[in-house]
Image 1 (cartoon, one colour):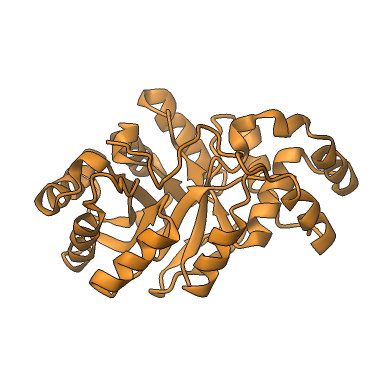
Image 2: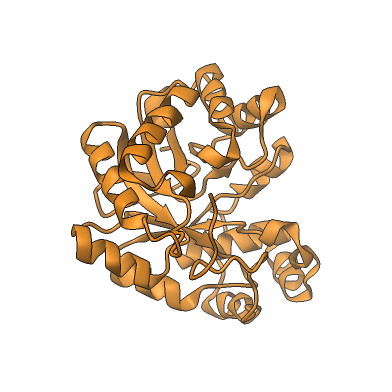
Length: 280
């Protein structure tokens, strides 16, 4: 990994950068340029998904980069409409074909879709895809403890990563405790709450002023100190550099608690509760 971004070890022994680059809505030549610039600026973890319809964009940026493929950590995700075993295997292959990659470093089930209730079958497909050499490490997104416990009970294997909605307005305290107990790494989507009112928050601005940092840097440092892997997205080279310039200062326990106090019971951005939400 780069000297700039520390790595953490997953429970399967694979190392993952502690901050990554989100690619949602980055497509076409502009998307390739943004991702390639991010790699040039020091990012090594690149997060994509089948449903983002930009795996080819990510692959193009990887091939255009001067950074060797083995130094990058590329993620994609399985959509809900392909949770049946055979469909999942074909979709993982298609993900690789789209990106023109030989393997993904991490592949995730995007949502559990508990009403359809095929996520265990999808998980078995990921387990086997890892054995086939398509994927180095396997994980999930948006799985609640009850879903994770079922995976362990029925397959004996827990995900290395659970990517969840996590930001100061929704700090997921109990979910993080569950992850820590079971050695599951937490990855944060929408880590900056999609640049919501948080960027005008007085508490965060006070902390930013004290540390001579931006509010975004304060939030991303908070994620890092929670042990969560944040994946902010920005096409701006300046913001890309800013978002990984968080390793030269530290928040105190009191400051972390101040940020945690901003959480809200209904803090989800779009009310996407994994207990009932379905995405295909």
